[in-house]
Length: 267
Image (cartoon, rainbow, N blue to C red; front, side, top):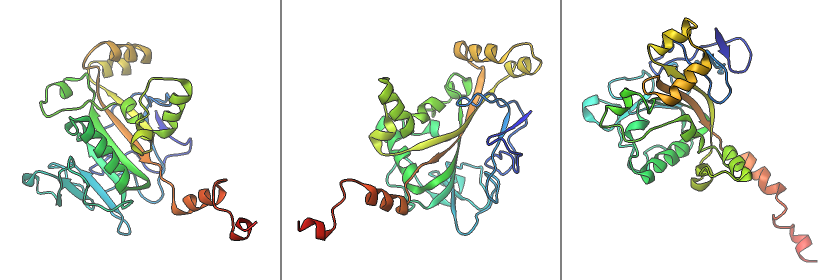
């Protein structure tokens, strides 16, 4: 069963950072909206991670390693990877202009970055700065309770959908209004990201047991809360929310605190 995010027929499928569809395995649970299956998004004119660069729009494949994307700027700090651009993502500022990036791929990268909280928050701030309004950011990370995460000594930070949602200002305001203890990081550091969807991918034997209907979705979710190696990885798509110049000017004009016209000031 395939689901479409907006309820319409899919025009294009979710593609991997190499331009191929994600493997046709069970992608479990849009954790924010409760849907099940392989999710699709309709995008204007090109698929989500199609390896093309249209009209000079910059697309960054950050922490590319050996996995290059044709037509994207492949970025890594290791010269042996032969990247298009050598950049240490833990050093700021990043070398790209504000609002210059249309899409970002971070495939098994974020868990290697920001062992210090200050550095991790700096990475999030730079990601927000360089991306255009509603740029697509594609993230794949190992599940923090899977051996893929636990056995690699270069994994310094667990990345979860809930953790990424802390950079949503709408969620932050809900938490503040509700008196919750969640840290409103989006408001604190001046970024605002919206999560489009989250897929949690189960590992065997749980995947097979679910597909054979030996266990329910609730059983699988309960197992993931109790045991290691049930879910293998998360895949997240999110986008920054930014005001355009026109919106800022409109806000200024509608503000009750704006300066009165000169004629009124003289009275």
